[in-house]
Length: 441
Image (tube, rainbow, N blue to C red; front, side):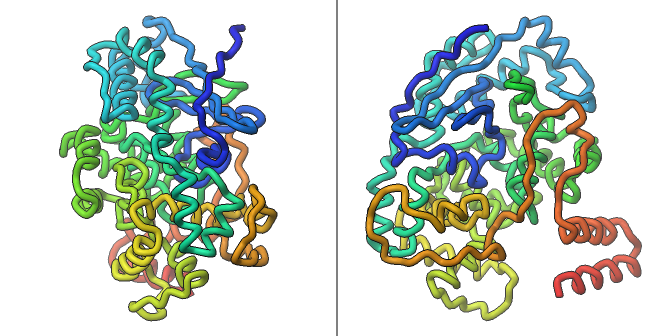
């Protein structure tokens, strides 16, 4: 067995803490594979990251698969366990090249035409790819200091959650991951995305019994029958949105169309994204922030609205309604943009992380670096936490594709009511709507 070669990202904890950044609901594909170690597939490579006391290290765990084996693997029926790209090994190579160029965009390497070109390019630029993925050219400490100087509440949270950065993700992965985020929590989204990748992605390796796959191509998710299969895997009403959005994106130009949104103004890109099935203002802002280079995008949901009202005493012009209207979304977003400035979306991510149940002990505890705080900690209040108490051990077991997804009774009831409403005749739809209204009460 070969020994892993660990290399430095030159990222001290104040600049990058992967234990928070990779677990705060931006990406759902990083799995813990050891003490202070997380692994995922980026640009067609299986990569591990390790947090040390003063740095982040990375290692390439990709095992090259013989072309014949890859072709055999990738010709499997897409409904088989560990599903793949039916286009074969050449398509997998092209996929890797495309994903790598997405992560390296703004200094893209020469065009690659086949899978044999991929490995040298990735080996030579793996560190650069990761530095771009984590936006390490953006210095975080000065931003933290600036936000803390104008915002006492941010100062308190930031001392307990240092090094939280925005990821620069592949727009395709980012889009379809957040279509899955509707009425959901991080643990369940993570398991759903894992199932999707097993079903429609290309396998890149295993670590201690956990399998790792590429994120599916748009074309794979646009196939007829995807909705049906994803419903079987527990995606509920989101399955329809995924297939429909994939068909829309494919018609617009595929992943290249998504990449083109990076060059457009924030408002234009956001307007284009909300035309897709399953994409509302909040999901569009998540995509703009996490893969479209719009640093001032503020994803606003009921939790962020509550944060604005509770901690910043924002009085919404839309009244006391708990519904997230477009007006409320814009008012909250504009408030935080004015408070935090050009990189407001980054500051938002720190504060959002502070709302997560998984980090409540850190937020209630002592600061990571000694400093006086302007704001006393609130007592732990589980009712305000974004993620419900669902614990999932993320393992790629052989039967994971058929195992039920963990979810609350409320979520299950809601999906059942929505399903009944969509498929029933008018009198039954009326009853289903009435049932949903009673549930909200």
